Image (cartoon, rainbow, N blue to C red; front, side, top):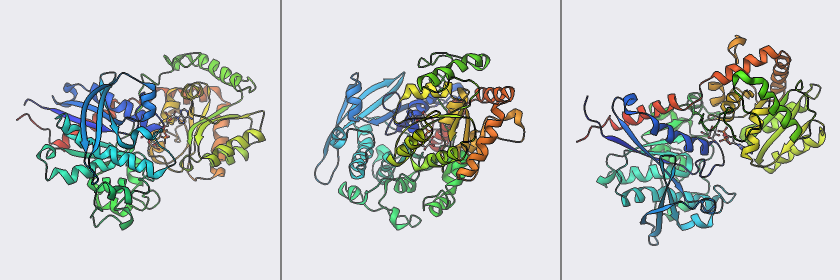
Length: 492
Ligand code: ADP
Ligand code: GLC
């Protein structure tokens, strides 16, 4: 077997758990790079990976942590003069994490804000700082793996520089798309201010040529989505966000690799946030978590009443309005419901209204609360995910892993991960097709009917708990892609 060189992978994201998490991207960026580092060369035909993560040094991070070591000071080019920048190093386990600081980062307090212009400036700066940074530490990156619009311009920057700068001539790029409709707003002026030109690509519609995500999509060597089904969906007008024709023109470079979850972190047997820990053989212990949750929310403590939970960003994407209306038209059924989420004020208000309407059985917890989310996965019977679109979705996998059965719309990654077939013994959840309250209500009735048969319900729970949602299989797929792109590079 020939001697193989390490493949150096730089994974770029706007958030990564446990340093900073807002949504599923944070879960993925905090767990996939770790899973990639765990793959032994024996599994990769002798090849090894040196995976490192890079994040913006958001000021919320500076407030929470202090164990960072300064590793580099460098300048990011800008038409009005260079921007002084610094990079710090920290670790998640053995995963090196670089944090880049400079320019507008210190003054933008949250990871994402309602101020599009400020966010676009911040992430344009970050994306352009990344290549300068790796040059400053003389680290030759083989794979630049960007995620979402926030880091997409790094891929464009690479394409522009790779021809001219030998330092980058062997660097290949991947852009993973976790949420296509978010492309980077109000970006035309920002990217021109940074000295970037409008992207010249015949296949890209005119409107998209100054927007970070589409430009990154044009520039990337490989485009990925976070589930195989979503990779097919984005080639259609329904899900393609106006870029479907462009994506069809790059069809050979578009693939989907399913997300996993960190099963060490999400483990009902060891979860420190739970009052009662359990596994698939101790489901009776699980029911104590249900009673505790009913108690916490002053709901009737009755194990026979199905306890429905929802843990979600409050966003149009998530179809929370569909669930609210669906529950309203199902009010003849006996259920309790707890909503946990924050985001769109209209959806938050709609949850609160439902609580006011059904004070004895609906609760709305309008906040971001990681520990409560864990208690809900461990105590809820049914987890609602009525999404209009879902690039992958992690909550259904977490829910199944915790014995909380998902009721979800058959879209994107939800369809790839939840089994709802004619063979009841194999099923792991409930799926509905039309994005309507009626379709939701019809499926809710189906779920509640099965809930009444505890044996069938336990089977559903166990099927979900036995499903393998760990990262291992998918991490191997990423590793093989890295090897394919770099041509299984040999040392020379
Ligand atoms: P998305 O990334 O689109 O928000 P995912 O299903 O991929 O959806 O991931 C959502 C992640 O964020 C999960 O880990 C979920 O538990 C968590 N989450 C969402 N809303 C809340 C909340 N209000 N409090 C705590 N955790 C939340
Ligand atoms: C996005 C998507 C979600 C996906 C997550 C992580 O936020 O909305 O479906 O699971 O990214 O990839």
